[in-house]
Amino acid sequence: MGKPSRIHPPLGPDNAWWWEQVAHGKLPIQRCSSCGKLRHPPRPMCDACRSMLWDFIEASGRGALHSFTVIHHPQFPGYEYPIVIALVDLEEGERMLSQLVDCERDAVRIGMPLVARIHEDPDGFKLPVFRSAL
Ligand code: ZN
Image 1 (cartoon, rainbow, N blue to C red):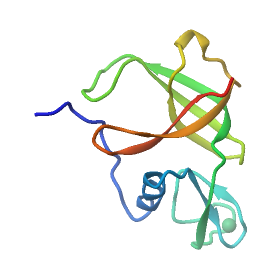
Image 2 (cartoon, rainbow, N blue to C red):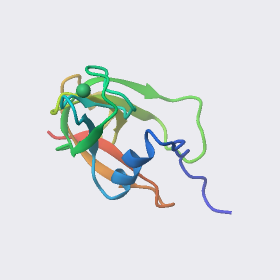
Image 3 (spheres, helix red, strand yellow):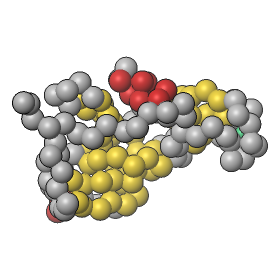
Image 4 (cartoon, protein in one colour):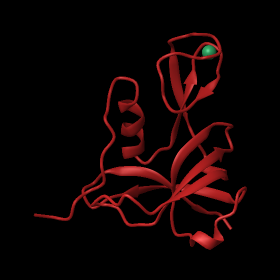
C-alpha cells in the first residue's frame, strides 16, 4: 500500500470546472458575464447583479499575504506539518485561501509579496500553492 494522499475536495457543478482548470496548470477566477465582477471561491450567482452567467479569467498568480495561520494539529496522513495556510490578496482583487510553501515560519510576514505555482502531488492531484516573491 502506498503513502496516503492529500484529501481531495468534493467536486460539484459549482466548483469542478475550477479544479479542472487548475489540473491544466491555470489559476482561474470566476467572472460575472453580465457585470464583470470577479468572485472566488466559485459559486453559481453574482452577488452584485444576481446573474447566473459567468466565465473566468486566468489570474496572474501574483498577490500579497493578507493573513495566515499555522496548522500543527491534528495531523492527517498525506500532509507534512506544520502547514502554513495563507489568505492571499490576489492582484486581481479577489482573496484566495491556499498554502504557503518553501518559506520558514519565522520569515512569514503580513503583506509579503507572493507568487502562485501549481503543485502536483505524487497521485497526480494538482492544487495552487504560493511562495514568497522576495
Ligand atoms: Zn454580476
